[in-house]
Amino acid sequence: MLAIGVGLNLFVAMLTVFSAYGGMFDPEERVIAAMAAMVLPLLLIAGGLLFIINLFFDRRLILILIAGWAISAPSIRVFAPLNGWKPTLTAEQRKHSFTFMTYNVLHFWDYRGENHTGVMQNATLDYILDTDPDIVSIQEYDVLDTKGPWKIMQAQIDSLYARYPHRYESRYLSYALYSKYPFQPIDIGLKQFSQLPAMGFRLDIQGHEVHLLNLHLKSIGLTDEDKELYKEALAVPQTKGELKREIKEVKSQLLSKLAEAFKIRAQQAHAIRHIIDSIGGPFIVAGDFNDIPDCYAVRTIRGKDMHDAYADAAFGPTITYHADRFYFRIDQVLYRGPFKAIDTERGDIDSSDHNPLITTFLFDKGVIPAPKRYDMPTAEPTDSTTNHIP
Image (cartoon, rainbow, N blue to C red; front, side, top):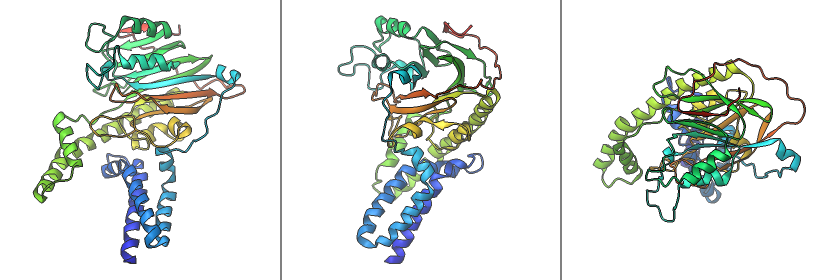
């Protein structure tokens, strides 16, 4: 029995380590590692259950699990940070802070349905206005149509535009930016991709030049049939034949699409990291990454000089996508520069299939050196561009 216990604990510990560092492998070469990284939460739960069993069976086996967790600690910390203390800003500090929201708004539809109980006007717009961040970076933007079924009111649009005098909206590209600080859209290229994975902006935040990349990386692209298959795979099969059929269909339909998406996001990540290195200086890179926190794409973009705002300033694990039982944190906020994330929270709103992330940044004290500068060409406005830096 002891040998079985040792083997089982070693198996779970080794899988945990492999999953924790799966994001270090390029999906073009080791796509199985990218897939393994997605199951880290399940392996941590399995390890926790084994820990409890070991308390009653043989406590020495706990050391195997602890060793696996210790080796995996950097990735576990990104997945489930333990920043329990949130600083209270003084009046002077508040003057040197700003709030940032990234939000995939699902075209301002209501994921819960057109006639969701108690909704009198667009819930997504209401949440943005009630939260009142200084900068709102939006993916899956669509025109604010008061004649559509999603209860967008003219009063909401008027309030949004009054609140945010500096705006960029593009229905064609599906990106928007609302800001209390002036900014200029910049042309960052990336035309080699069929779907534009990022929009670039140069902001003037309290006199500091900060570049922003608003990201929407490649999604898996599942059909309704694929989603139903995924839900079936989560259920317990009734017969052996049904189990074999589900395994075959999952491998041919789901895993192939997942692998292709991993590879495309890796290519997008390398191109985005090249842009960051070319421009230099302070940066915020945020949006819908369509992948987990420590995946290859996030690691590539983050490099060695950027921080994860959730890992730096949040507490515990969370999810930002809640549709079709795909419960993952796929929206990320990365940053570098003369400021730090002091608080990051997931927005408690489910009108979109994504939850927003809201981060409070605080500028560092002292003199800030002039950033390294590489001037990117100004982007031509596509739909609506208002009040930018001259």
